[in-house]
Length: 170
Image (tube, rainbow, N blue to C red):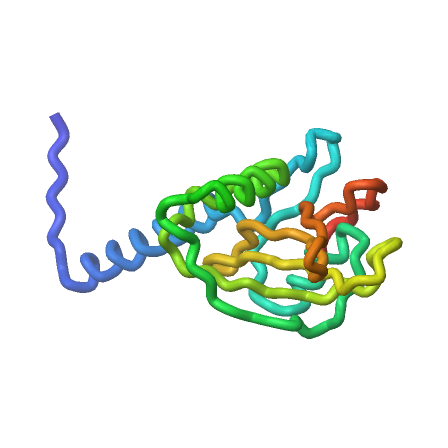
């Protein structure tokens, strides 16, 4: 049998704590996901859904769908995702699920909505906007919609034509 005797000093204990914290932080950064591939509409097109800390990152997300928008959002507001979804929210969440996203996890939480004016929507004379829902600097949902009373709404992609998918600039 082998016995080892050690004398613990404050310095050794402090060093052990620092090394332990460094290991925890290092392992945490390994498991932190910054980008998630999302398959939209089951057609094999893959987009990047990622953390957006800046306006440039939000614009990079938008442009991967082929949209040209004004650099600054038309609106930025805080919205509350209801705890209980009514029929309207169930339908809206179904749209999100068709994009590989889901608002269910964010029930009862306040999120930010960034609204951008789309400048290149084909064959539409009405104003068209892209709404992006962001929680914890992550895109969690959104839509493209017309502001007309009898307008339309769909996911980030243009439904009638395939849009080239580009990789976002991080």
